[in-house]
Image 1 (spheres, one colour):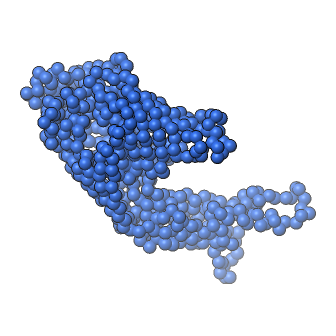
Image 2 (cartoon, rainbow, N blue to C red):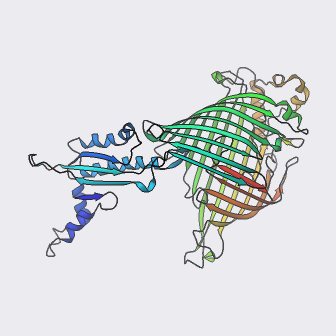
Length: 551
């Protein structure tokens, strides 16, 4: 007897039932489900387990996946059902090596197998005639896989009114046979003048849900909203994992040399004060719980995401010290409207009502100290503060249009809150599952800086050291900034647009109208478009792409 898991599991019981005598009494009759359940209780063991098609994969990686299955089958009380369950768990684990997964904003290129190449087959092992017959069934298990090409190369271009760029990507899969991956990326464009990164990642103990990666990066990015260019060069070490509850975590250490250079002639005193070199040494933890049915076009479900960063604390050193945290929460609910029924379907039209909230806080810390109560903390730098506003952020405002400004420069803030509500409505004469939607939205945001502007004007000539604050001053400044979030109405915009959700990217074309604009902030009335996905680089990290245009 041979059966393929997932396809022929009930064939034995069905055939037995089909050949049963029609005169069988109701009392003695056994249905297919009952007979199958009894068959699954049969004592069984694994005689052999073979993996075919994994010529470039190390035996040790396969042992981590399938050795527990073989060891369990050696126990005297093991049943056929238990073996099938353990084989199913192991093959699902192996199938995750055929996926390109996203763990905590980090795309893990561990797809060493082809998704369509999997097959699992069971057969009863032949029993030598000299062997004494037993009630225990010996099984031969055969697992078929197809490996992907070990080398892959891609190149492309992106064009938009705001930026044009070209990129290349080279990937080496399964380098040492243990699902290791080396990815090298390079891009150049009108805004991101150059960006290079190389990432080597490998599973820990053959676990596809636990990966360790090392990354080196270098980039140069124009930031016209703050009249400068930022150059980065550094490395990070990251451990990313998927929990039993399908939540993703990432813990990373990064050391990055940063340089604010290429100042425009109109650069503000705040930007000029932070120009030059700085070194950030930090630990970051990212948590993501995503229960949305479709990340690109959610109809139901929710997302919770937190990012916590600690820089310059104790042994971390560097010359930037702060604790920084962000929280993002969003959700969507479907709502049926009979009046929106599609002409091609009898189903009622479904609109999705969604909302989101984002919060952020940056708390300056004394450099190199283990306690926030000892030492003196310097104000945050322009390149560490939050920026708010833009078509991918708070629609209806320019890039960095919200929050503190020094002249024409957006200099960022230390505390922010932003919220949004939206409705996604099916267009007439489209299928209920069409990826094209009409969008109605309203969003608002507020970005506040610690109140050190007066000191900056008085002591700017003394350098950053002269602006150092004791712990009590920092606490009062942060408390005051948090309270300022509720002082008056936030900047608010509303609009309408079109959304197209491709499987790997989301595209929007919106008309936005600022309704509330605080003094010094910059709105953007008119058309804005943007797209986001999971292929491109941003600041040297393979976390996706974003293009945005002000039309």
